[in-house]
Image 1 (cartoon, helix red, strand yellow):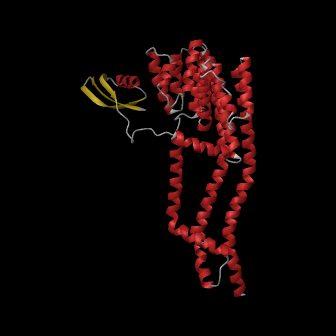
Image 2: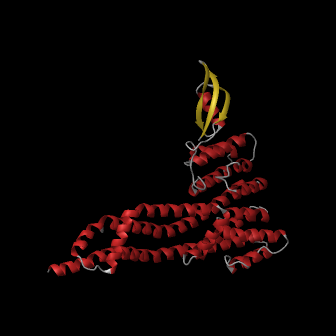
Image 3: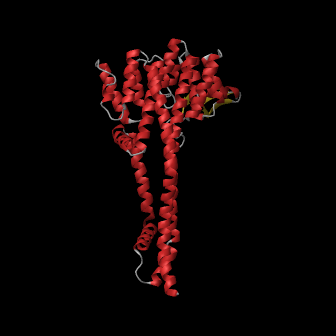
Length: 401
């Protein structure tokens, strides 16, 4: 919600103040309902205290898909775009989307096309969305375009959820394992230290190692927290810079087990987006530029840029892809067939379907494999600490007996 500073008049005289609303028009209407005639109104700039903090797109993908489905249904039913936008702004559960749609409604009432109005909200509406809407406006098939966008984002959401679910399990178990180990080292192991010191004698190597680790953790736990925070900060900084993100993406794609899955997900996203853009008659060079910016993988984006440059110079689109390890032969061969037969959008859609199924199978296999491995790892860590305590205790019992 934006904040507006206003000055105006009511029956009692001059009025000034600040009002929160999704748009300037809505703020004026709210004041009019209160009997205040607005003389002047200006938006209050956001500060760190009032700014809404969001990571990436502030609208959840599932909320966006629902919006597209409902929008397509309303347009197909003959509801004007302005009225459809107004209806969707009132009923969406996403605050960010509600704010954007209210602003778009105002622009539409002023005579601007939907593509121009949406382009002002870059955090919510991607360049792909804007260009496909522009193509739908030109072709007069807005309902079909919105349906294509809904299918595109739906498939993208499904693939992303599969990747997240595959990575979430080992990450969760790893966090639990670290938490359990820290608890044992800080709270449990120290209670046996005095007993071992009274016993004297030489402790087993495993016990000595665990006691040293416990002593370090008690004294320098803050250092462990600092290292974790530092590493997370470094990853965030690397991810925000395109040049450094390239090396991070390269490392991730080259990782054993996970790398292949991430590669397939990136290829599926690229081909699905290109297919949707081509099907909406977006020019090929423009489509490649859009995909380069939204593919979310700098290694793949760099190859797409080379392909676009190659096409601009009159060479083959697939030549840079054929020379790069990240693009399997299936992708380039299907693109070549699509170019020759004039069915590039259909071929790319088939490639996307194939790799989306591959990602689904890979994530299912990975979860089945990781579950026993992570349980064994957790049992091994806890078992090592327990063993380090039990071994010298057996010696103590033997001496006592």
